[in-house]
Image (cartoon, rainbow, N blue to C red; front, top):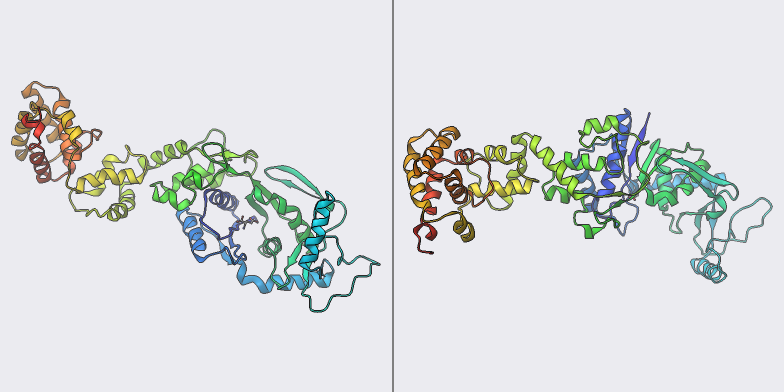
Length: 472
Ligand code: GLU
């Protein structure tokens, strides 16, 4: 039974790198009928906040990454960590160290001066036949892990291949501070063991922790999970992804009008591949996802590709779903959405032409607000010669059935009667109704509006100075 986990530290947003780690862990469990555990690593009390926990939960919910167990909070497991520390002290795999912090600093300073790697000197480490100093009075000891002194610690990383570290390189790690609180690496180990994690999929900033964690797991007699360390994500410019690159929080993609399935699809391909496949559903991803096809090199973010995927999913989304997503965006802009024109019809006509939900809101907005086309567009597309065309179009408009085909027929008849080309009428209609040069076909566009609004916008437009020649 495969068990994976996502173990974020709630110190900020759910950023894009964390989201990818969560996605890979989730998909691996889902694709193998396993379990996916959410664990909040909130022991750093100074940096963890409830808002950051909420941001993680919101981000995962938005991406559709559901978990089978948790969220488990490390701060609620302190008794458990203390119990394990007690067991290790009793078993001799951990020991009390009374070295005062100042003494440790002094030791490290000396080692540095001698060009040595600063490290604990093992003063309080029990060894067979060694006499330990007497514990000084009034000093609260830390607890150190008794790291194996010889040999190597090695693992076959599922992304990076074999990694070996000499135990001699590893210090006796502090696992409990003088105040009794357990330290980071120790909590991770106890949790991964208690939660029965089989595959640890995480960022490669944790590679350095892995040999220590493996040694502690072994000391506990626990099975060592498999590790897959994901390479980092670089920004579009090839630099380490940071706030400078704009959208770092997953929820910012929501704000910017991306659909979650586009972000999931995009993140799925970021450092993983399945042949040449670029477009896949969440479910397809879970079926295909494996750890053999993760690239060990850093993945580079490509905003253009994300935009392309977003446009792809926008085209295919049901208009009613997009309507529900655009509605609050319009409300946020103070737009009152009336029954006519129908928002869903507006969206159905435009969803193939936009890159994101905000652009969809932009086009929808002009249908509900009084419009003031720019002077520049009016001068470009309207001339005194346009006026008779509009007048004859408006004169016939009340009599036709209100649907695209009849409107289209009227436009054709009108330009034929005046002996002009289609754009001579179509462009002024576009400008006066939407203030835009680029719109879907003009007959379908007009049919979206109630007839009275078309008549009203055209009447207002026909007052434009350029039509009366006074601007010339
Ligand atoms: N809490 C760690 C982080 O947010 C992850 C630890 C782990 O996955 O082992 O970077």
